[in-house]
Amino acid sequence: MKKFSIEPVFRHGFLMFVVVFTLVPIFFTLMTSLKLFRDIISGSLAFTPTLVNYERLFDPSQSNFLRLTFNSLVVAAGTMVIVLVIASLAAYSLSRFRWRPLWSGLLLGMILFIHMLPPVTFLGPFYLIARSLNIYDTVLAVIMGHIVLNLPTATWILLDFFADVPKELEEAAMVDGANRFQSLTQVLLPMIQPGIAAAGALAFIFSWRDFLFSLSLTSTPRGMTIPVGISSFVQEYSIRYGEMAAGAFFAMIPALLMVAFAQRYIIKGLTLGALKG
Amino acid sequence: MNPSKLSPTPNQVGISSRLGKFIDRTFQYWTVAPLVITLLLLVAYPSYQLIRMSVSEVDIVKGETVWEFVGLKHLETARQDPVVPTALKNTLVFVIAVVIIETILALVISLLVSRSNHFVGLYRTVLLIPLLVPPIAIGTMWRLMYDYNYGFINQALAVFGIPGPTWTADPQLAMPSVILVDLWHWTSFMFLIILAGLESLPQEVNEAARVDGASESQILRYITLPLLRPTLLTAVMLRTIFAFKVFDEIFLLTGGGPGTATEVISLYIYDVFSGQFRLGYASFLALGLALIISIFVIFYRRVGQRAQA
Image 1 (cartoon, rainbow over the protein chains, first blue to last red):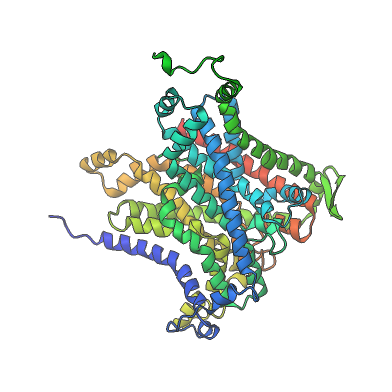
Image 2 (image 1 turned 90 degrees about the vertical axis):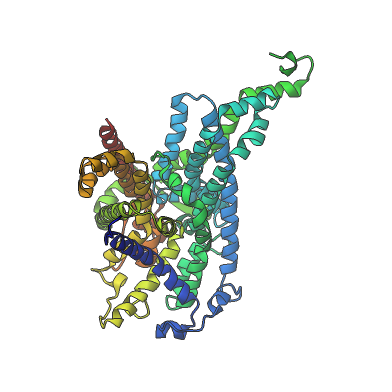
């Protein structure tokens, strides 16, 4: 018979403390976003929840948050589509064909390198490029930055998925008369659907999260995204806690939705294959 | 081979098929082309611009970019700029502190989780959240948490009759406050990497050691930790590189202040770029930061190779 041990109690106790520590700020923010100002000040736990902060945030006559949400969605979706097209084609080419190590190494090395560099390094050049292309302060400029931000992760995830598809499948399709384009679109891509979903979801979320590119490549609500809106709101109205909290919580919703889905791939994506397994 | 399965001969089909064959034969280049073009336009060209900007004064006059070559003038400016050493020092303090604390915390958490059969899914899921949440939302949340009057922390302290400090506005506490937020954000990253490493370790070794009468702490000390070394090294390197990127949370929590207490290098570069609009000097500093990180990556790869050999 197994002896009763006190160890699991301490172990789970400590881990539950970590879980609580992680959730408390989110919970506190959600609560604050549902409170009237007087309830925030009283700090009481008993209060009547209200959506007034969200209503104010999304009222176009009081704030530009609605416009920024639209921009954020356009930027994230645009980035996701462009990155997926570039990355899946490249991952296909690099994993299915024989390349001289020099060339594939150069490409993958460059991808790794941009993943390592702080985004702040790109600010000056990107600012000039956006100016000279006349896209400064538009969503296009932000998308341009986000492509660089997201290409490494997406390419790396898709390389992994392509590598797992047996070569015979493609050969079989070609024997049946398909050309390479057909075998790619009709045989390979359907097989790596989970990879495309994972890479796309991560590109969306990392575009949605970004602050620095949007901050430096836009100056008005024309091209700004949500994080910039939240930040200027926080700095201008540091006392309007309810709306601050509502904005922050709203910005977190895609992340919270993704948590269940992205689990398996996020680490692979963030570490770019530095980790086997 | 069945002849009917072979592709048609050239005289049976027209130009379109020959074109098709040409595309097929060169398909590997067509598919990689978008990536190559993107890298040239959005990485190689900007890198060239960055180098060019770092030896120039750049200004926008009536929508036109005006360049003036100044050589190594920015190097001289940087050497006399009192904020540069402060920002470097703050960055180093920040990076070293978060990497050490997060490694230890994540190691403890992942060892505990790997011993557990229950709630593992819960731990993993909850700890993934901070990695996906927008850093600006993290900064906002912690601003609310740290708020002197109405923040969760000071209200909780008040319950015990302890008067709370001003946290991010206190020169002594600003850096620790920022570090605490980073622990909240990034410990998960280390945890997930180390947990993946632990889960891929062979279990038989532990079993054999246990049969031979090794205690749990001996197994940890002489088997698990040595086997985990490559994973730990990778995690530490990646975390160090990512820690140099820190920007959003500090921007929102302290803006580098009070004074220069939390002014890190990324924040200062942004300030030179956007606040002072000195594009050339900002690019020079950015190039310097890129060099520091490149040197670190090369150094790490050397260590990593030696560790594997």
